[in-house]
Length: 307
Image (cartoon, rainbow, N blue to C red):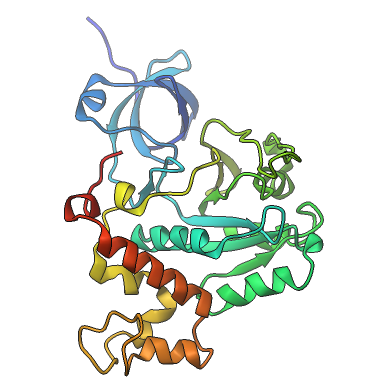
């Protein structure tokens, strides 16, 4: 007769690769495989998942159940995020606000708190860090200026991350791994060398991994990612787009026309706020571009959730 080992609920999946998962329980780490029921369910286990595991007694175990997720992302693949740290360089590579705003929209859609870390501030010229910060100062997102390869400003960011599971997200070459090393040197995150030929960072991180860096505090190093296709990975309705720009929310419902698109209509409170400098012109331009792109999609693509 086989005897099942002890089970641990609310264990944390730290990483997974090739069907093997590192899971943290209250008694220590286990190297686990998923039970057939989970595999047959079609759910893909992600770093950050809370699971129930059975301990085999030899350092291995089986994942028996997956708890409901608070949120998740497809790229980077991670679940139950307490803070998404969007890392963007002031220069080299030059930031593209529209691409950053796509990510803020996804974070809002998934109800993930977001902070912005601007790296390489000491390299910026002609006010580049200030210009980028000005765009996002009119949002509720906290902004952290990082300079001198993460040695300045990283401690303030780490203090803000305490008690949270934080995911670092950013295009290749922005200094994400370098920043992680400064925040928690024990991570020893592999850093990449920016390609001089193509001015684009090499993707050095291959697997999403959560690291414990304090009590109830975890940070994730994630693979470099191609910018997300909103209609492919995130169920998004055209009508909800204005509410996914949090700085616009207080003005919604106060336009002259009840079905205002907030693009250019007369009597639009959003447009007026942009003209008055209350809202960021660059953020509004991103909103308009996203709105038009989403409206142009066929309905079956607009609501697709397939990978």
